[in-house]
Length: 620
Image (cartoon, rainbow, N blue to C red; front, side):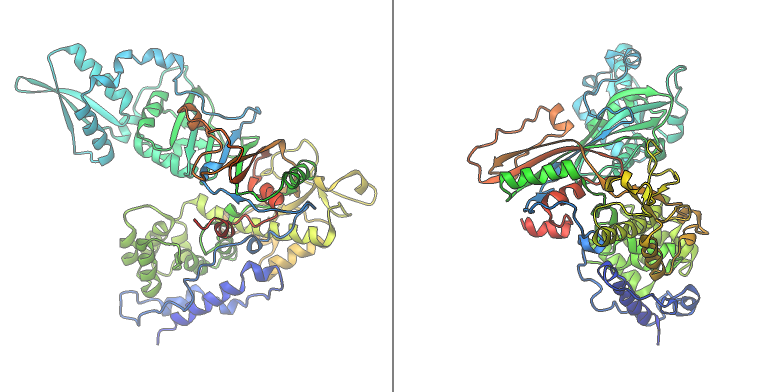
C-alpha cells in the first residue's frame, strides 16, 4: 500500500492545527516526526509514472478558508468610539493611491509629453496617420503575434518623402517593430518585422542623456509587477530594466514613479495605445534608477460606501484617528488572497520544511479556475509534475515555475524546485511570516500592557534611517519611561540582528517562535534567500493631512472619486443628490511607507477589513 495518502492527510491535519486562530489561543509544538521528510518520500513517491496506487485527495481539502483578520493576529483597537458599517473597496475605483516621493511631492500623472530635447529629435512627420488604417491593424497584429518569421508589407509610391514618413511613424508609434524598403517588380514595398531584443540593445544612446527614463505609471486593478511585465513584453525588453520604489495595491487606481534603463520616452509613450486601464507619462531622463524603499509614503483617497454611521459617529471616529492614530498592523494584503495563507508557506520555508512548502503551494483549493484546478488535482493525486505542468502552459504563474522545478530537479528535490520560483515571491512568503509574528505580538502587547509605554519597551532614535535599515533601539528605563508616549514605541520584526524588548514581550516572541520550531538565530538561514536580519516598526501611526467628507448617492456604479487617468480623460464626478438613498464617506490621508490604509479604515469602522468579511456586506 502506498503510504503517501496517509502522509498527505496528516499534513492537512498539521496545517489545520497550526491555523492562526489556534495560535491566538493555545498552540502545541509540532513534533518533527509528524512532518513527512524528503528521505521518507524518496521511497513513497519514487514512482510517479503511474505504477503506484492513485493518491486520494483528503476529505475537506477544498473548503473555502479565506482569511479573516483574527487569522493573521489582528484583534485590537485603540479608539473608543462606537463603530459603524461601511463597505471598503466595493469598487476598486473607490481606492486611489498616489505615491509620495522622497522630496515630498505627490506623484500624479499630468501629461504624456516627451522631454523637449527628444521631441526635437522626433520629426513631426512621424504621425501615425500616414499609415493606412488597414495596415495599422496588421502592424498591431504583428506585434501581438510575437512571431519573428512573420512580416507585414505596406505598398508605397516612388515618393521617398512618403516612405520616410512611414518609416518614422513605425519607429515612433510601433516600438518593437523595424522596417525596410523592398521592391517587388515595379512595386515598392515597406517590409515590417519584429525587432529582436539584441537589436534594441544595440540602439544608440545619445551622449549627455541620463541612462534612465523616469516616468509616472498610472494603473487600475493591476499589480505593479504585472503592469511592468506587460510593458516589457510589448517593447520586447527584459522586465528587470524597470525599477520602482514600492509596489502598489492591485484593487485600486494607483500612480507611482518608475525608471527604465535606456528605454526612450517616445518608445514608452508609443506603448500607451496598446494598454488598457493604464498609461505612462511625465517622462524625463535621470542618471540613477529608483530602488525599493526610496519613497516617503503614499497618499490615499478612499470612498466607503453604504455607511451606516451618523454624522456625529463619523466625526468622532475621524477625530479619534487624527488624535490617536491606529495600530500599525500589517494588512490583509500581506497574507495573500487564497485559502492557503502566505505566512504558512513562509513558516515552512523558515523551518526548511521544503516538501511542506511545495505541498501548500500546489495544494488544491476552491478559488482556482478549471485549468488550475485540474493541474493541482493531477499533481496531488499522481505527483507527476510533467503531466500537471502541461495543463498550465498557457500562462506564467508561481505554480508553473514550481512544477518546472520539480521536472528539472527531480520529484523529490523540493528545495531545488522552490528555487525556480522568482526570488521576490519566495522572500514575500518569509516576510509574511515575520508580519504574522509582529501582528500577533502587537495584539498581545496592547491587550495585556495597554496603551502606555512600560519599562523595557524599545524606542527608535529620532531622525534615524528607514524601516529596512537596522538602527539599534533605545531601551526604556525607570529614569526615562516618562519621557515617551505609546507613539514612540517600536516592536521588532523577528530576525537574527534585532534586539528584543527587555520585558515580558521578549518571552512572547521566543515562545511563539519556539512553538513553530524556530529561534531568532535560525533567521540567519543557510539559504540566503530566506535569511532575515529583522527590523523595527512603529506600534502606532498617525496619518497626516487627514480630511473627510460625506455625500449621498443612489447608483453604486457611479464613481465618487477620480484617479489620474480619469482626470486626464475628462471624466467628472456627478453632483451628489441631497436625497440620495445611500451614504458615502470620502477620506484623504497620507501615510509613511509600509503602512496600510486599510488598517486606518479598520479603526474608523471597527469591522473586519478582510475580503471574506467585506463580501458579506456586499453580496451583489
